[in-house]
Length: 265
Image 1 (cartoon, rainbow, N blue to C red):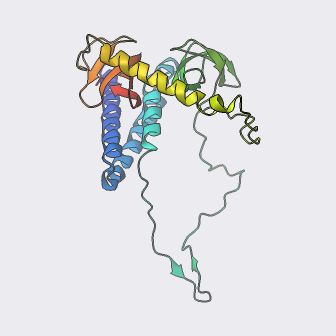
Image 2: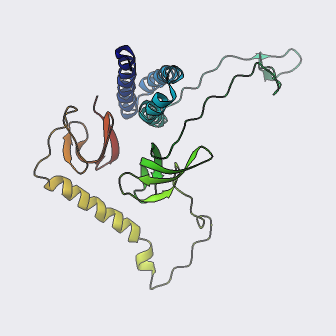
Image 3: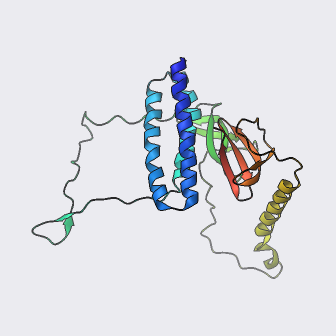
């Protein structure tokens, strides 16, 4: 890979991390003008990424999809929390009716037309590559290693954090009994069934909080440091947290208010 091309790839990564910070700040501020301004920053990054893919060989495409493609996926998921601005234009009324109508409508195109745009290339998944999936054991989205592929889609994956193997999915599995009527409680079980899960979650949170406070060393977060899973750090914005996973250009840190992806750029 030439030096010029490496600079283009690094510049795109830096811009993605910058927009991640802009989006996070806009969401945290709660101000709609800032959120409206952050949204349009994402499409140009996507176009640059697609152009970069089209100019790359197959082997380099796979590497770009695992790195930049994943960063863009995280950015899009993060941007879903932005306020959406509804835009439009005034409509005119027909002379023979009192109801508004659209001034122009797209013409129907035959499915056999040779001018139809070519479908976008689907991402290529391969055994041994990395993909983001929902881990039922960790109860959240995590990086997974693909161990089986079926019809060009991941079939079986292994969580890189808890090492559990399961089917590929991007959201929690729905419970088959979620719509069934709740069983009647009995005197012997009513004291436990309603509070067991809450008690467990509260206990785990208290244990985690104690672990953070009892840590004798908690260095202030510095993007240039070397990090490892399980390390306790002190972030200037979110306080103490525990590193769960070290990714390219960022780290996943669990704070008291939840899991955050912290950029190292």
